[in-house]
Image 1 (tube, rainbow, N blue to C red):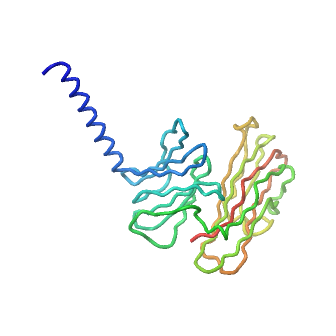
Image 2 (image 1 turned 135 degrees about the horizontal axis):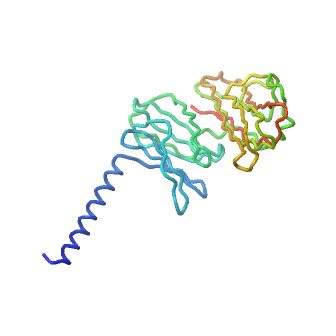
Image 3 (image 1 turned 180 degrees about the vertical axis):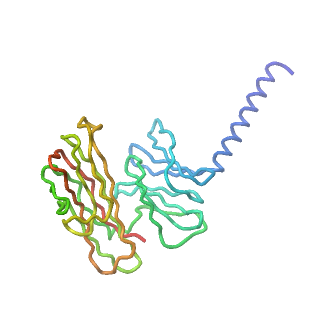
Length: 265
């Protein structure tokens, strides 16, 4: 065999191997994306049903990283403009239906919610995840931390929204996220969601945000809060409050994104 013919055969063999490898990868995984300029969230289901994500721009992608959850079929990902979040839907290995969210930079919120029912196939979703006529939100805003109560038994209401489920069978969700930008070190601020005004009750997680630095991004502390009422009474108004308190001496700015209240299934 001539030397030139051997080179051609090697290139052809390499091409065949590459095609087989690509087929193998695509046959054991699935990819979905939801666009929000200037980046996209890419979600992949691996051969063992674990879930992985990456963020991509027009020119590059981050490395894939795993996040909690397992799906038995291709996940569905969409961008929810009102929540300003990515939403992932999928079918678990037992056929149950689940959904969760990522923030706008692709950080997984680990807020899985089970949706009533089951299915043997992939989940389909178009447009908004929720019924828009029943979405309420309070605009993004901020407050000087010195204006927040130092008594965590009598917390300061930062903002609030109200929702009235139209019929039985719905679930209520509330969510927000934000940043504490301190101007004093080692002094905490606590934030939480609650269905009661003021007082010290927190129905969501109530993280204490404290930083040992006030240098730009390094000193900022971020939070994401979610609250669910699985079986609310129909035709009853529910109020959601974002509340905060602080340690004496804490200063800086507390900022939050829109407080969203919505109705799902």
